[in-house]
Image (cartoon, rainbow, N blue to C red):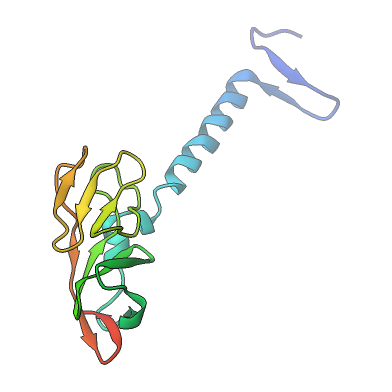
Length: 143
C-alpha cells in the first residue's frame, strides 16, 4: 500500500525517508556538538583549579613553551614563566607551541607573542587570555 511516502524496505523493517533524514540530522548534530568539548574553550583551560601542578620548570624551554592540555606554558626569559589559554580567540582552535617567541594558530595563521600573549597578526582580533601561575620550587602551579 502506498500512502504518499517513499520507503526503504528490506525483509525486517520499513523506514520513511523523513525518519531516515531526521535520524541522520540528529547524528550529525551530535557529532558537531561533541567537537565543541570543554578542552577547546577558554573555560576548559581555566578548569584546572588553583594549586594544580601544570609542569616542571625544566619542561619549558627559555624563549619557548609547551602545551599542557589546554594551557600554553611559556618562559619568554630565563626564570619568567607565564601561561595562556591555548585556544585561539578567532575560532577556538588550539594554537601551536611557540617558535622564536611566537605561537601560531594552525587554522588561519593568527600569531601571538609569548612574552605577553599579544596578537601579532592574522584574523584574531585580540591576544591570548592569560592564566595566573606561580613557581613553587621546580613546579609551575596554577595560581
